[in-house]
Image (cartoon, rainbow, N blue to C red; front, side, top):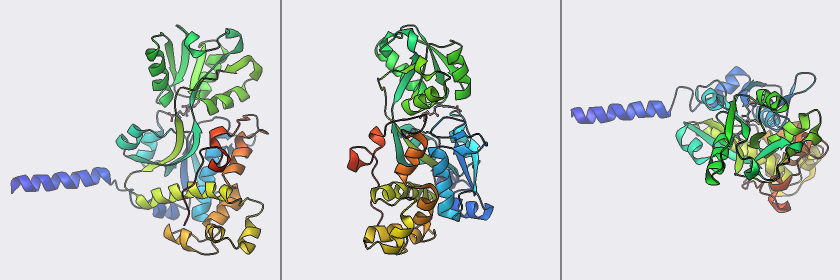
Length: 340
Ligand SMILES: N[C@@H](CCC(=O)N[C@@H](CS)C(=O)NCC(=O)O)C(=O)O
């Protein structure tokens, strides 16, 4: 009897750990607050960076805004919380933010051990290194005994250590918490190289005074697929974040753009497009959202390709070719599960 009571108590305790007070109700909490709270990067070109008016800009930032549109039909109903790599997951776990769109790689151990869930891959990246061009290094293995700047709490820390160990070449890591500490250290020559995701290297290089003096070495050392993270235990919220991300991609697949969404909604006879744009209501209803949620999102932030072009396309300083972040129909990896 006693044993059984103990087992029952353990079950209850386990249920409490797995289902904290704020679980199961994120959408309701966001609605009641009148605002989404979104965790983003502290500042990296292309994903999240304040512009000259102090307004956040970037792909992660727009994905936060689009989620606010899905819920409120208002892109301004979002508060951004810039987070370092080391603090981002605890901030989510503790309920400080509702969702994390922050250049965060999806890995098995992050998924299984942090009390969090990651949603959909919205950006495919890989780890690389940047060096001063006149260092004369062509391959990373030549960085023998080099000092390498890294950021604490990133996958990049581990990827770098793993690589140099695997080729039995020594290096000296110098750890920082934030990118805005690494860049001055690089410029001052405190480190010979900086290792992080290649897209962020492109962002860093684009903000250097003389980008040509900096070289991003061509090798890639890991898979760094980015996904949004949410807390475990709130399936409805995970569904929203997951299908929201697919919707942004699906809009590009179907050729629905910021400019033509209105007309497509009025005239399209394609059942997929009619569902996507809320002419028939089932997609929004299934998530407890307005039937026009995707229409509103696309009108507000555009489809995936439009977001990409705006923040890292050829006409931006980041100028990152789409490569794996092209649609699967164009030879890339970006692929939405069917919205039906
Ligand atoms: N994708 C990697 C790293 C992402 C990342 O954000 N890296 C750098 C930016 S280059 C960073 O941590 N910056 C911290 C900051 O500036 O706050 C991960 O998920 O661990």
